[in-house]
Every structure is written in C-alpha cells, then in structure tokens.
Length: 548
Image (tube, rainbow, N blue to C red):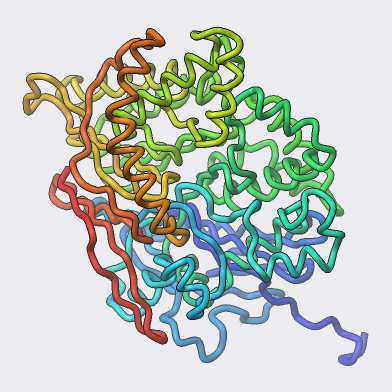
C-alpha cells in the first residue's frame, strides 16, 4: 500500500473519560471515529463497534498508590490527546490513597450552549464553572471523584442542536417528535453533553461514577405499573427504551465497574467478543433489562480511602406490582444490604440514590398517602385519580415505595447503632432530582456517641433551574402545604408512621450547584457552590454548608 493509499490515523469523537480508579489501576473510556487500537501509558485496547460507533476501554494497571501520573491517548500510534495548544493542564490519573477524601456530586444537567441567551434561561453550568475553576487551581484542589446522580442527559427535553440532528434523520411531526428515538440519537445526545472543552478536560482528569434517573430515558420512567403499560402501547417505545438502556450501559455504566466486575460482566464479554457490529447483542440485552429488571444489577460500590460509596439504581430495577412495589428486586436489595453492612474500617458510608431518601416530611407523607390510595385504600374510583396525580406531580420517590423506605430505615438503623469497629462516624444519602438543594438529619432518640450521624444531602440541579414561579410553588408545596396536608392525608389512608424521624437542617436552595464532601481527620463537611463564568474565568461561591 502506498503512502497515498494508507488510511488516515483515527481520532477521538468523545473522551477520554477517566472512570473507575483504585489504588493501582484506572479505566480510560473513549469513542473513536473508526476501528482502532487505543493506547494509554503503555496499555492498549482494540475498539469494539456498536451501531457503527467505535469504543475502547483501556485498563491501565501497575500504578503506585496515592500518586499522580500524567497521561496521553494514542490512536493507532498517533497522539490525539491532549490536543495541541490546549489551554488546560495535562490530564492525570490520581490513584487512591488513604488520607483526605473529596467527592463532588450533583444531578440534572441540560446540554445547551454557554452563551448569554441560554445562560438567561438555564443559568451558568455549574459543571463547566467547576472545570474552569479547577483548571486554574493547584492539582491538590481537585476532587477525588465526581458522583453524577442522574439526568446526565435529557432525552425528552432536547436542545436546538439536538432537534436539528433529529430533524435531519426523520419526520418530527410523528411520535416521538423531538424526543430522542433510538441509539443513534442517544449517541449524539451524549456527544453534546460531554464535548464542551472545559467539561471534557474535567471528565478526563477526575474519576466519575454515574447512575441514571428518569430523564436519561423519559420523564416519570417506571413511576408505576400503569405508566409502563401506557408506554408499552406506544409503537415507538421499544426503540426508545432499547436505545436508552443500551446507551446508558455503554456511555455511563460500564465505566463504573471495577476490574473484577468488568471481567465477570456477561454483557461486556458478549459485546467485545463480536467480530463485527455488536449493536444487536447490546439491543437484546437492553430489552431484556427493561422487561426483566431482575436480570441485571445496575447498583455498584466504590471504596475511596476511608469512605464507601454504595450507588443504588432507583429507576430501572423497580418492582412495580401494585401488591409489592419496591425500589429494587429482592436479590439486588440483599446485595445492597450486604454492601451497606460491610463497614469494617469504613469511617464514612455514603449511599448514592438519584431520588432523595429523606424528603421534607410533609412531602414524604403526601407520597406515602398517594401510594396507598393509588393501590385502593380509598376505593377503585379514587385510585384512578391518585394514579393520575402520581404521574402529574412526580410522587415517585422512596416515600412512594413504602416497603423499600422501611427496609432502608431498618438497615441504616442497624448500621448506625452497631458495635464499635463496624459503625461509621457518619452515613450520608447523596441524591438529586428535585431541583433544589438541602440537608436533612435523621434523628435517633437519646442519640449517643455510639450512634452514627445520618444525613440526607441533596444537590440539584447542575444546570436546569426552576423558573421563579416554580421555585415558589415547589418551595411552598414541599415545605408548607405538604407539611400541613401530608400528615393528615396519610393518617386518613391509614399509612403507618415512618420508623424514623428527620428534619431539614439547611436549605432549600434553588441555585444551579454542585456539592462537595470533604473528609479530613475523621470529620466530614459538605458545601454547595454555584458558579459564575466570565469568558474563560470562573468563580465558585458557597451557598449552603453542613457539618456531618
């Protein structure tokens, strides 16, 4: 083959994303424009293909614990990252140590341009503001992990750029209109979400853990059995749910897995063993995961220094039988309980769930009442009205899955009041979804130093604020109207009182924000920060804080 006939070297379409990192290894995720061999720090991986898109998972091993190693990405032997002339510092892999831990978390981020028009509507992107701030700071200021708690993409509320892409492919006058329809559109949606230069740099140098929520698929996803039955009747739904789950597994979930979990994952083995395009294989898995939620576990765990993070899927794995509604199936719950109880040498236990476990108390009671009445506590006629209300105003959090709420209360109480040596200093639920931020504290009567502190920490949105009117209505509903009405309605429906009590101690705040947990010398503090960007200079300002 002559030089003129030789294929051009490949390049990156998306990434690199730094994903699972432990004491000695790291995973780099990339999407390339063609089949290729991708190299990082001497480790290589061949791409695999899904629906004409090409991906590689490069596993780097043999790193020293507690160290920082700059890295570059080669595609077919050609250096493609960092890009020449990049204004950002070189990306690094920082392996886990055993000292201070800093975790940044949040949820709900719309992928729209960063200009004056969109900033007026959507506000400053807190993720981009954080990226620009960290790029100008010392490496020591970077968090040890980025925990993204749902709605990384909005498949049902698309941007102008996404609508233009959709309109060039199909007739948007036909359902699902300007919503995402299939894997190809999901792939473009993730590209829009993660290609801003600052955000791309941040994701290349801070390890990210991710879990999905409803808008990653569609608003109210798996709210109830009635919702599922209604969506199953839509002729376009199978392509949508198949494409959404397949894309989530590929763009978000597979990077959550540890080396041993990747080695044992049957989906990864099936996809990478296909000699051609593995799209059909991944589609078959995705459809089964939707139809048989117990067939795959999306929840996962990470140990980060003295902290353990247990991330719970509170969407795809729901059991929606009206006679036994639970957040996850029994087998997954047993796995979660085992991870939560395994707290030897764990100073701080964090439970990530996109949906808040502890809502403002009145709202909790309102959702519990709605679950009971939708199940027939006030008769069949009112049950239909209760189901309509559930879907209309998103009454679908842990409070609306009473069995799971009670099981978690019992589990956390057992751990928080357990023996010395197996009792964390603090237990924190990390959540998003509700589009406001707050901290709540679970109260144990007669609490002593032999009881862990238990908190609910909510940070939402990263970039998708409520309008001023909706802020007022949400605040009034959650913290005033529901407080008055919720408890009374729950009693009338004979809903048992929760086995635990709690109160909101900080917030609510409705800013675009990211929250950062800092664990130092056995203490834990969390702060919520909103960002401002002027050109390429960003500042982060604290708007809320709490001690754990």
